[in-house]
Amino acid sequence: MKGQTRGIDYLNVITNFLDNNDIDIKKLVCVCTDGCPSMTGCDKGFISLLKKQYNLTNILSFHCIIHQENLAARVSIPEVDLVMKSVIKIVNYIRANELNHRKFKSLLEEMNSDYSDVLLHTSVRWLSRGKVLQRFFTLRLEIIAFLQQNNKFDEIDKNNNW
Image (tube, rainbow, N blue to C red; front, side):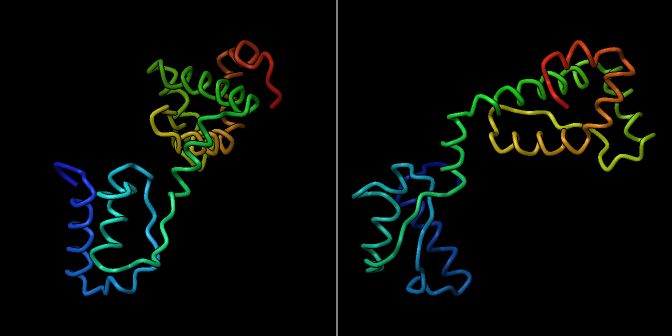
């Protein structure tokens, strides 16, 4: 959406979409939102306006499960934080220096790896944590080989159990 994001703005966009695609709004059973006031506000929120305008008193509304996972992920488990810090340290070692990065990508090619690179973690996108960890785990043998070739395995891997 562009411009304002008030409840009425969401309602207009959604109803226009449903109308343009010949979808009967009366068949709507539930709405899943991120819980922001413009969606869930008692008087002017999208869900309230939807219920009032179309007499959908029995419609269910949910807080998006992915958003709930995001909120839960902010309360981290110490063991996961420790693993994530180690992974980020190793990925940064590989990606921060252009020569290291080229050598690592070359090693992946030589080893016929399923991937051509490691993923960077960004703290803004919490979903990236899982993708970074998954890719890192898949490439763990290649990463160990690279670190050993560069005499960095012992330095980086002081307290980790591979």
